[in-house]
Amino acid sequence: MKPFYHILTGALFAFLFFLIFKISLIYAVILFFSSFLFDFDHYLYYLFTKKDLSLKRASNWFLEYEKKARKLSFKEKNKYKSPVVIFHGIEFWIPLFFLSLYFQFFFFIFLGFSLHLILDFMDLSNQNCPLLSKISQIYVYVTNKNKKSFKNI
Image (cartoon, rainbow, N blue to C red; front, side, top):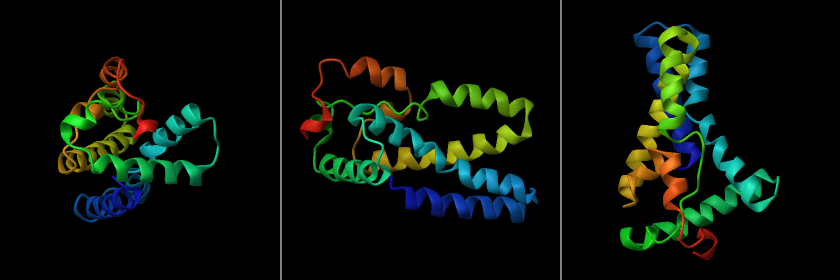
């Protein structure tokens, strides 16, 4: 999902929490930022695979990849490697959940992150993509073996 939609939805979600549940402004801001800043792992993926620091080229590269990937069938998409984006899986979500049980600060990060993943799941479903790519990054890493590199798309 494009960052704009995460930002827009995160702003609306944080604003509603602020109004309805009377959370503090700082928690609303944390909720807002955590609804989209987890996509930083996409940049990290680009940085390590392309050895390029340019945020603009990273964004363009992922947009181009997404455009090409949207044209492929579900079966065709499964032939290609999925990017391993470290913040987009249960391996990150579970520790965040446990931290949120003890620290209110982390609860709002957990809420924003959960919103982010729900939006990603909805987007993947609309694209006819395998949802497992956002459930476990260990699974993605393991199943990427013997698949074509997505630079070939």
